[in-house]
Amino acid sequence: MRNTYRAAGLAVLAVSVLAVTGRENTAAQARIVPMPPNLFSTKKLNDHLYVIMPSGPDTSNVGGNIGVCVSDQGVFLVDANYDLDWRNGRAIPMAQAVIDEVKKITSQPIRWVVNTHHHGDHAGGDPVFAKIATIISHKNAREHIVSGYENSAKNAPGAVARAEQALAAARGSNDAAKIAAAQDDLGRAQMNLKMAQTADAQRSAPMETYDTEMAFYLNTEEIHLYHTGRAHTDGDTLVYFKTSNAIHWGDTFSNRWVPALDGSGSTLEWVQWLDKGVAISPNAIMVPGHGQIGTQADVMKLRQYFTNLQEAVRQEIAAGKTREQAMDDVKLAEYASYPGGAPRIRTTVGSIYDELKRKP
Image 1 (cartoon, rainbow, N blue to C red):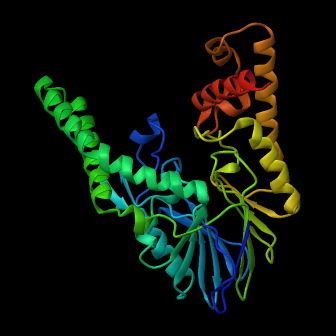
Image 2 (cartoon, helix red, strand yellow; image 1 turned 120 degrees about the vertical axis):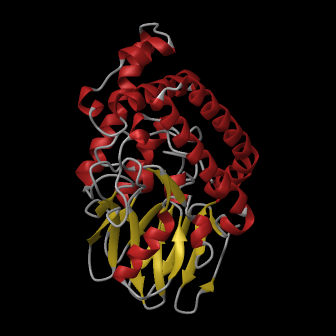
């Protein structure tokens, strides 16, 4: 179903009707990461379209690239970053930091925020933005976001209790490193509990959803949202700024990053998603969910990554290898040094193995 908004009168012609999933537990969490005011840098694409990008030596925990479209009717934002994020021993208000960055660009208010999918580094800030803007997502993304709030409210108190017990045990060992790590874990658990207690799933989750396509008409930009199937998740949104000829891919395209696969996504369908996205406008500016702004060639490089992995796994299956053997055998040296690296390659191989074995 196609939905259309005309922002001049905000006339809705058709509408179909966190914390959110957390980041992976990797060694990157323990690194020293950028702090305000140097969390972001802003890339100007034209007189009304910008990308707020993570900055600093390690961007793996600073959220994704955020699209900013300015018009007289207000600001249209792509993704919400985290709400609070634990870094260097304290909770940082990431969504508010994004709002502050937008204020450096324009005095226009933020009126619309699109979640490209449900993960916390892209939708975790919804409780902050929902107070000032309309949150929009694919219908599947909203379902994941709501269940994420519900699961967090259920699990966060127990996580705090376990972290308190771990800290007590660490103190008993008199090991300074263990104590420091346990204190950090407790601080993060307490932050997550605070978010779980203050977030209202029905008020913070996307209020508008769509099925396959949705359009917005601002005075500066014609914007189309597309969902063409499963890829990184089963609720991905691709945002096409038609007037500016720029595409924001969310995490369906990460530039020189090893992408993660959500349990609801599909490695096989992801290739089709990339083909359909490029077909919208092959010469568009390609804005990834993570990494530097690229071109069609960069998107095709990611496509080649998936097809190379799929062919390698097919050969493993043909040779009678088990899932674990395939995960041990298949390696792509070129990608191992990218953020995400070898661990994500290994888990992706396992997912491809499962999909190919299920395929008739």
